[in-house]
Length: 309
Image 1 (tube, rainbow, N blue to C red):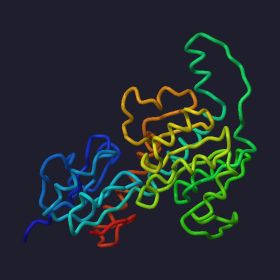
Image 2 (cartoon, helix red, strand yellow):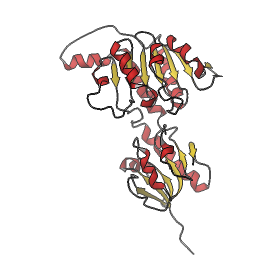
Image 3 (tube, rainbow, N blue to C red):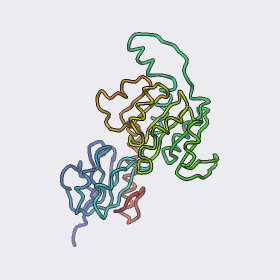
Image 4 (cartoon, helix red, strand yellow):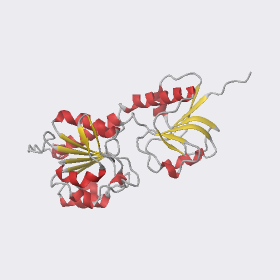
């Protein structure tokens, strides 16, 4: 009687291994960052490195793979490297909480001018001043998937008006969700605009000079989507004028080069693509990977499949 082959899962680093905890004894975990040839000819689940180039996926060519499970919500550019006969899933359910939390952090810090107070404190100065509230503002969510809904849930207790915009118009228990053709109508109404869309051909440079010009003076643009959703030159021009403010967790290029002019502007708050990087993500990664292992072992369809090549 031949031995049963182990269920093989590859992980990119020790962080992911540590988050898995106890797993069934017949599951073999192999650390592989995808920069070298595949360690096995049959891999049940491949987990690529977090927030790195997709080019390592080319090393799966000719490998029998059950599922490629990425650790991000976004997967722009993956099809350029993903070989044929692959099933690819994103990390829906993992980062929505952390990303929504970071979005509120960026909004509140920007509205209440916290960076100015930090700079003043660094200089040993006490500088009280009045600044805009979040309460009583109108916030436009450009993108209303899982992240958009998580942001909305956290915004509503702050006594704001939330406008939702998705690809297609529809209604829910809170009322109207606008379709994308209403974008230019809604931008002049918003004190705060949050980009929370996936990056694809339809959303590349969605935030361009025209988009920004329709935002009211003194308004705030927040990008927690992907850097390529916004035209960096258009962002820089508006920020330099001082007409609007920016809070960016993502940029194009990324990482933003040392000395980039966006860094030097007091009306621009930048965080280095860390919206999903919190302790809240780790147990959700664990739950997702464990669920995928059980589904594949049962022969069920995995969760969150977004691409089949």
